[in-house]
Image (cartoon, rainbow, N blue to C red; front, side):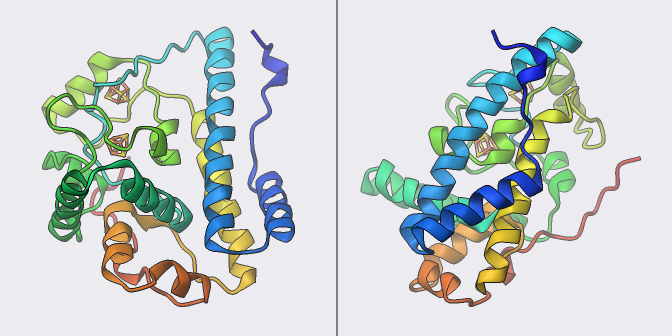
Length: 243
Ligand code: SF4
Ligand code: SF4
């Protein structure tokens, strides 16, 4: 196992520089954006493995998370637009036609129903993420799940379950801040790298962004050409403030 000193935590600066280099070499296209997301997800998985090992060693933190545990999947999922395009492609390629149509209808209905709800309101109402499979609570996106979902690690399943049962949106899961530094670094890198290239980019709500991608003709091409296509998927105003 690697030692604590070897954990290299991505920063907005380091990942902006890395992403800028990537687009300089590869050019900016639908393929290169999807490739960048894929590489970032791979780097994230390596980082999180290391971070979990280090936090176990230094703080005794042990993740209680496992597939089929979805109490935390009842909130708003925020992504960068490149992640939304990546997930849209995953859905196009990874499901047969009937399953894909059913999933798209579920996502669109969820987006319409929750449009004005922030994460806390969704949690209180137990609005399950549309990708949480009803039959077994597995994540239906699996390998394509967003950065923020990968970063979520709780040290206590009973606490997650108790918060869910009490609909207590203000009770934070016992976690470690370092897991989310990676997500923050890449969200920042996407924005800092793509904005100077003329792209209108801000964090978006996943289901709303997918609805835009499926509704609008040539959404990816128009977004790359500088059009502001994701206005309807902007994050809702927070309704529940944490202390
Ligand atoms: S964060 Fe909590 S609810 Fe979510 S998978 Fe981990 S233990 Fe389960
Ligand atoms: S995308 Fe998957 S991991 Fe993320 S909230 Fe939805 S079901 Fe849970």
